[in-house]
Length: 115
Length: 111
Image (cartoon, rainbow over all chains, first blue to last red):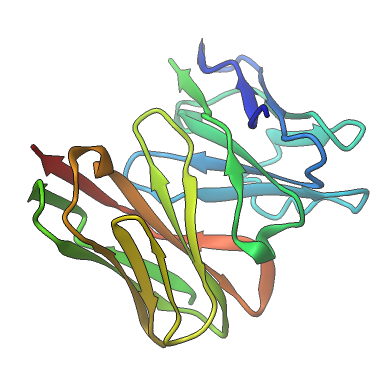
């Protein structure tokens, strides 16, 4: 079956532009996570969606970052007025039940470069 | 503060040369410790979950063990295809939504 799908795989943008990153989780997975991975840093939690509950947005680094999940499936991470420090790989992961099982299924990531 | 430290940062082995990777942690009540493998340009791939000290899990040439302060990922007779970055993450009792990740060990196995 299909895994977690992310698009675009690569995005180069200019400072100040807005970008949207898309994640299509595994069908039936209720939990969805966004992480950011930068060189020399561990995976940084951004946001968590679980079913119909209010998302946990506590990891979003600034109000330029937002995410939504429509219909309990596809999610979009939006970064407004991008800055050079936003350059990183953005990873989406889904899970059938949540992180307690420890088994998250990751996509291949969207590499964002802000010039 | 909850923390996960992996060592070494990088390891180069000859094919067949067994070794171990370390993940030491400081958390306020461990709910689980997880090992993942990450290949270049890919997302992490789940390997093991360990829940309590003394627990062991095995998969092919890999064996993960857990004590109250650290976990080891033992690699027996590695092959070049085992080359990857191995990530460790922990889940603490106070926060059941966010894994705390180490920086990983980059493993290269030479033929």
